[in-house]
Structure formats: C-alpha cells, structure tokens
Length: 449
Ligand code: PMP
Image (tube, rainbow, N blue to C red; front, side):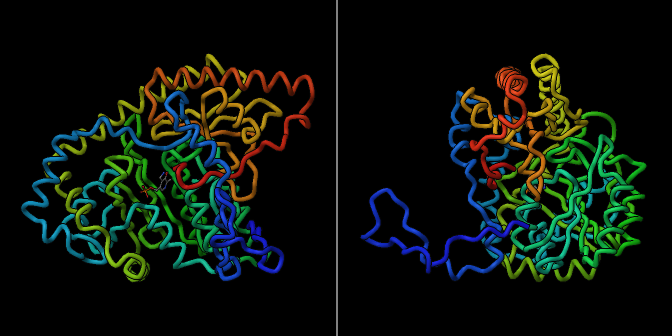
C-alpha cells in the first residue's frame, strides 16, 4: 500500500493564523497527530481538472451519475410532502439501527429477482452501499491483511481498503469476469507467502469500471475456491438489475448464504440522493454489522427509508427500472458506435448493462498523462490507474455513458478520438518514452463514482 507521508513539524514551520500569506493555505498544525490510517487518504490533483470538466462545454464521460431526469419527480415531491404531513414525527425521528422493517421486507422482493431468498432479519440498511463496504472492511481488516480484488476494481472500494490499511492483491478479469484459475493461483501464492487473506471483493454484474459480467458458469467455481481458502466473498451489486438483455443472473449470495456478504443499493435503480443501500449477511456477521453501523451513524435516515419504502409501495418501480434500462442501452449503443467510428485503433469491452465501458488505448499511450490534453479538448474520462491499488492501468480509461445524451456521447468520443490519434502520432514519431510525461495526474477523489 502507498504510505506516503506528509512533512513532519520538525522540517517545516507551520504558517498559521495572521502570519499566513493571504490566499496561501497554512500548513496543517495537526500533521503529527493523524492516525496512520489517514496516510492513504490523498487529495486528488484531478479535482482541479474535474472543476474544469464540470463546465457545460466539456463532455464528461468521467462520472458515474445516474440519469435522474427519467424519474417521476412531481409524484415523488407529492409523496415527500405527504410523508412529512402524515408521518413526520416518525420520518424525522431516530429509528432502528438495523433499518425500517417494512423496507427490509420490500428489499426481499427486489433481491428475489436475482434468486436470493432471505429473511428480513438478514438485511441491514446502510447509508448507501458505500457504507456497507466501509463497515465490512472495518469489521474484518487489520492493517496488513490482504483483500483480493479484481484488476481493475471500483475506485471507492479501493479508497475504503486503503483507509483500513489493507493490502490489495489484484486478480485479472476477462470478458466473462473474474478468472477462477487466476483466483486459485493468487490465493495459493498468498497462502504460501504466509499472508492473511480476509476478503474477496467482487462486482459480478456490469462491473465498475470494466463493464463485464461474471458468467453463470464461473459463479459457483469462484464461490468454491473462496470457501476452500476460507475467504469471505463481498458481492457488491449496485447494477445487477440494469442489464440490457434477458433476465438478471442469479446473485452469488443465492448460491451461498454462509460465505457471502451481499451489498445492494437504490442509487442506480432509483436515486443516490436518499443514500440508502443494504447488506445481507450470515447471522454472526449481520449482528456485528448492526453494532458497527450503530457506532458509525446510530441509525440510517428514517426520512430516506420511508420515502423509498413509499416509492416502492406506490410506484411501478419495476417499470421505472425498465425505463432506465432503455435509456442506458441507447447510450451504450451510442458510445460503442462512436468508439468504432472515432477510436478504431483502441479496443473496449461491450457492457451488457450498467454504466461503463473499459477502453484499452493503442500501444504506448498513457491515459493519465493524456488527461490534461483531453480536458483541454473539452472531454473528460477517468484514467485506468484510479482503479488499481498499485499504480497499474495507465493504458486504460473508463468511459461512462450513463449521464450525457447520445448526441453528447458521440461528440465526446469524437473529441477524444482526435486526442488519441494525435497522441498515437507522437508515439510513432518520438517513441513511448517521450509520452510518459510529468503532466500525469493523481488518482481521482470520491467525486468519481
Ligand atoms: N459499489 C460500486 C461498484 C459502485 O459503482 C458504487 C457507486 N458508484 C458504490 C458501490 C456506492 O454506491 P452507493 O453508496 O451510492 O450505494
């Protein structure tokens, strides 16, 4: 893990209070006091770029924001109004640490679509699945423990793992998801090296960032390998119901209710603003999850839970998910067509659902180094290095098609194609060495979901 240290008080004199120059941020006088776990928390140089990327003239293929204009906003406003009028003293009060029971029952209906049968007691409501990730990591990881994760992996999970001082070991995936043979090899190697592997973190459906889905055939094999090595599987599944073709695949949790912690979310199938997700865990883990969650937040927001519960009861939520799927499928098609037209020298995954495609640049190109030029050309993406704990991935970029309209996606990819062709030309002229330059930017912060 990256353990870069900030300068110590002995080396620098903090410029604080009135002595600080106007406009210059004084050095933090608390530098010596921070816990070791904060050393992995790095501010992102990319933030400055993203401030630019959020300008309307820039086509952002970077963020993972869902398309909320498709929601029945008027009806949701009326529901929220009614909720406060009729149930305000409950909605605005503290609630249960495990979460609202009616909502937990409704969540069982959602999970049934992916073959999961569980009891409401198995479900713990979280503040987004991000909190579920944080709690599970807090419960299982001591500094130096190993988490095995796909190469690449969701940037927000890597941030959590870093903050608990885990070592991440990446295992490759291909078009059919995590490769079982590679997992077996990695776990054997780690065991031989005397390392303590606690978790396998996986996003089996419409992977963020890779866009691929773990095949039906591989699911039981991955579970069997993890079980044999005594490794808990954390199945992070915010996109599972956003498939473009056919029925959702059975969740890994539906095949193993002892060895899997399942994380679900309303963020992509409804709205992230309420910040409601959930975890399903075997009884021992679930009890600790509730305690860990109570110590972090006391209880999830009652107002959010009741709003979502009412939405599920009163609205055609399955119809809404279907409508979202259609929107995202059209955008995925626009993205793939534009890539074929404007970036033929690159290669990319073909996502069967979700928000992202993973693009491999032509030989010698560095997505991290290229980003300032792309933003200058008014298009933004996330460089592949953000999705690796070890600095790899510079030849990849993640492109999101969830938010911009098909026309904007086309225009964004056209702009990106021009930058890529120019960079490839420079590589041809000056070789690879010349293109790994100092303009490279650091990993993105949490604004890149
Ligand atoms: N896991 C994955 C794979 C994600 O893509 C995201 C959001 N981008 C999350 C977890 C967190 O989602 P939330 O906290 O909004 O439920």
